[in-house]
Image 1: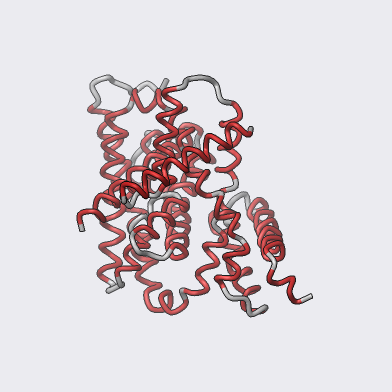
Image 2: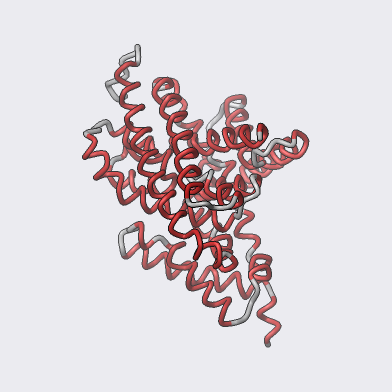
Length: 230
Length: 120
């Protein structure tokens, strides 16, 4: 019976079941950022591993197929970019300028502040892609010598912060253009931001999705260039 | 549906090949994304299956990185030592990036020669 613990089906079904419950709670909370299913399910699953004395590498192997889907999902971000080509052509100048400034601000401020705390380089590498969507951040952190798990949690945390602060921040700054608001939240707070923007305004949501997809490419390209130079 | 799955996988495969051959740190999946944009521009036709497949993948992105997030179990010492720094850096950077991006976007729209003020 105990050898069941070593088969992929065991940990795969536990993971999906825990996530399904977390997702139900998240829906009940009307998708409040603090009730994100990943935030709710991760501690529970870590508890399961500790209770059963299962090593993380073993769990990771068993649940490998979930992570495999991240690759095709990232490739699929091409579809919203292509669908929005009219908007990109019409607003090419603001989009390119805001994207460039946003991507550089995100990398420099995140890495700079963490560096002030004296963090080692593996941690800085996990922080650098923090504004990209989680799968890109994980892949990029790996390429830079960082820790994918750390990158994933940093990105989630940044997403929660962005989703909860965007509306009061933009109101305080007097920015009323929903295209600017949506694009900014997508560039800075990726999928979380896009989900929040869609709740507020359809235009903001579309621009947030575009900002997320474009910044995934931009930040990854910038970091690759920096890595090649260093 | 199979053709759409094949297209995504082939783009990623081509991206991984370019990633390995060039030695560039850009992840294969990101190169694959760029290749797919190029393919959609080259072969233009409606692709309802690809749209449905990518929407489905995007909608269920969260569960795919749960196994990676559970990897935090191995990061206990790092988190207890630098947890505050990580939280401060991520939070400040998120707010700053939103502010800078929104201000630049709004400023550039006003300065744009084509007057795209009216949302189409």
